[in-house]
Image 1 (cartoon, rainbow, N blue to C red):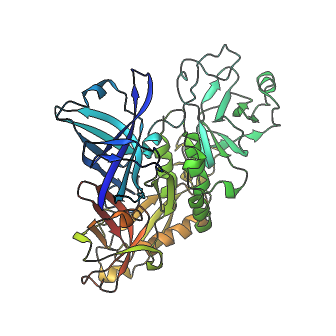
Image 2: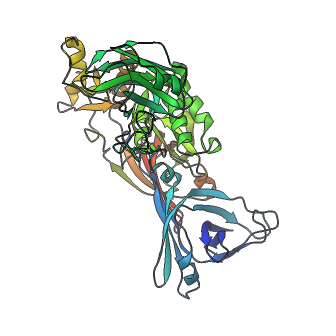
Image 3: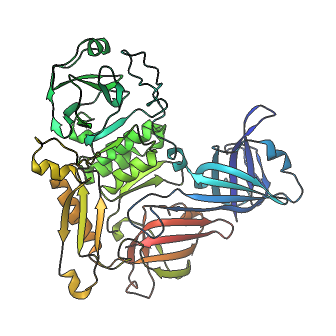
Length: 516
């Protein structure tokens, strides 16, 4: 029995011209008649097979910004046999790395170690280094690809003029507050809230913080362009083309609005918005774990909202980071390239996919978490919610003092605290987390949950284990494993969440970052 690693690398061959699949292995492998593809040779050129790293967040953190997985495949080219690939196109092409225990006469069962995207191929004198990323690379581009043409022939048009040309059209997901939409027709004072579909509602429109009166809805673009609202009013045209409103008189200052996308609160949860943004980014429904969406909705159904402005070319990753941080969720792709999402909770040994012992642990290091406080139990959580996208201080005299105070800061604040934590830890820190949650009740519940999660000491280890095919097939981000060693109270086993994984397929080693 031999552990064999294969790599299927897609590329563009200009001589075809068209896409081809390049196949390499660690031992020179020929697939059998029942395999796919059948009777295919995998050239024995892999020196380093998929030294690949993926983490939930920035290294040794349990919340915050997600991090793209990265790695490389090193191919031998001492004989110049790969020189002809120099003219091939690799960037953005698929790559799949698999592992199997190969026994003569037995059909191997392959385990996918990573399904990702080629970033580029670097050609050295004696090797070719194929740099790879996980499929989150597809989310790194601007989410909104539809731009303003800047072609208005005033007083007509909704495409703006030179000031809007090539800027992204705005997008709303969920419920948002005090956004500043672009004015797409300056002659007729028409503003656009959302592109490409109707909103559920326009909840309010403000001029320098003071609410305007809502007039009757428009029935069409022609109706909107041809009929001006009464002075001090706004009227909405909400259609499959997007959501617009027109003012009846010239504003005295910044125009803002509150708006809602999604038919019901159940359509505006973090899980549902995460799914919708992935689809907008071009991820197919089949590449998104519907089971994870259902599970997260069952665990937490808080309403949320995010806004992609015309003034900021935001990527899907930026919006998804904001959303997921709202409920302490992580997201990414698994070994098969499927997009996954889950909430960071204290791991339960009942959910463990395997036990790591001195038999397969090569090395272990206890490390400090890189969250705020570097692992010291926290005594207070400050949580921002109900984000006001446009912070304002130049407001009309009619705006109430309470609203003036709200508009002067980006987030409302809710806190959860436990002063008894400072008895054992006088330097116990506070942590501050900004979310896209919309209600005080949900923010209060989430602040309390985060406090419970972080007011007790949690442990983090970096563990290198030797893997066979069976163990490699179950280790992935978000999975729970049991660590059973005669140190730090783990002799009977303790559950840990896998927050990071680095695969070294040259040595058949996985280095895991574990938290619990």
